[in-house]
Image (cartoon, rainbow, N blue to C red; front, top):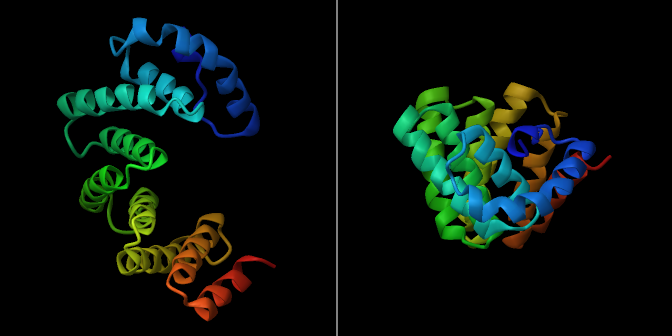
Length: 192
């Protein structure tokens, strides 16, 4: 029942509610493993991940990826979302290479299934750019961040929050490379 009650929205009250579930989910974790419905298991993994219980979340997320690949196929949108969630957990654990490998697979599949400028594909590109950024792979991070920014400007417009986040990400990559004036020009556009 706890897993079914997990909201998949990301408003403050949703985070607060999920946080209130942490104690109960941690108590049940060893008993439940992955014999539950994938949607329920994914909700439990979300709560654990938000609570910083990354290793427990990883166990559940890896099982979800495996199950969804078997049941839905490697390129089904639900499989790709599960892979994205697992990559994010790797990222939070500082496992940049593992996150990069999954993000590459998700991006390539998303391009084929959804198209280059689909919002999920662009998010996958941004996630991979983040993996590159964390590993100091500045040219790869920059290339993807530029592509994401240009596509989001075209698809969403200059003022959309995702476009502004892309500007911020690209500015951070420029700063890491010592390209202060390039970073500043983007920062000026993001902050009023």
